[in-house]
Length: 486
Image 1 (cartoon, rainbow, N blue to C red):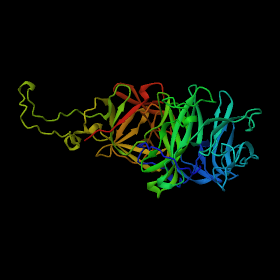
Image 2 (image 1 turned 90 degrees about the horizontal axis):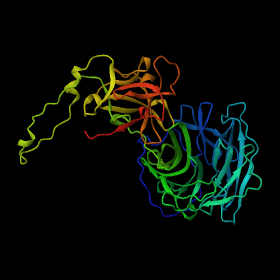
Image 3 (image 1 turned 90 degrees about the vertical axis):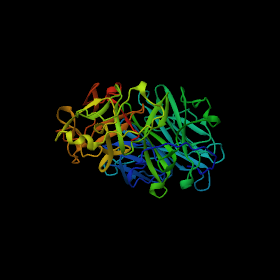
Image 4 (image 1 turned 180 degrees about the horizontal axis):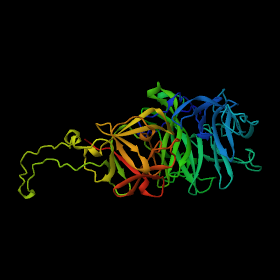
């Protein structure tokens, strides 16, 4: 949160063209996302925050948090929500005196009869003279261990961490804060596969399109550190591996939060200091979170376009089942080729060359070798008025140049219907996995009245796609979405 200018090198990250969430996603210093009774919440500097009622795509104001202050965080612990926030600090009000406070609530829904925050409890403070600034709280709770920590601090001094009691939200008796990093702020802790990760926001904030905020990470086997980056630089000496800096027409990534959607499907939240598409305002961003060699990295959203949809199982391509039509070609025996003879460029097969032979009505879908053929070219388009999920709207998937739509059919089959009509069975979630490939999931199954949360496009055999329950541990569930030159 502190406005401190330092030199930094920006790393370009190509997120999806749908960079920011829809609605009014205007926020600064967002907390980690929290789900409560089917709605999603995030809190920011000030007293309020944002709510999404359509799965995490459209956001608007309405979340409530008393106490004001800056840079809150929230975590669910058993059946309650713990909120941590900072009062003053960060140079706000002219000083670096600050306090980290925690409070509980049974629900995050302001309309619920159970909505009532407990009295705030101070868990850390800075006196304005010491080498730390008590601001920018980040919470980590490990359910399996029933342990809770909070990290805090800014560029003014050290980043510190202290353990809290997960039953009361108070600092554990006898536990004093320890220094774990410098040269960053807006930190967050996470735990994965036996490693503790410290995510810190580096660079400059609060300067609109000129802000250089970026998110870096170090890791340790001990929550107390040392937190080292990928080349063993200690974050107490300014180390940190880049996670994300810029997005698609947006700059200044800050205030990391991790949200696990499903096994193998994770997203990260942050704000962009400035979104060029929204007048340079600070907005909420939700990006895929991938993991490579044990390190977190912001992933890539799908951009609307024409793609090969390739099975991770074998590498075959999704296609509609049509007869193979040969491409005319004047061929020469390779041993008779004159190297001085002019070579003409061949065109790919065109839709007009083959579509007249395709049958009417629904067409089966199968997998086969990718051959740059019209029956293999899938156009992916965002459908922004049908709600969505964390980070994306739903998509329709059609054969390029036609209205033939990929559809969840009866008996867990997948077909290409002749017309796209906006049915929920023709809308698809496309989520990047932590490995970098994609999960493709229909919004609704045929004959069902509620949204689908389990069944995905699945390669039951090398040539047979069906709908089956998501299983992160098999490549049958995973797809590559490949852009080819035309």
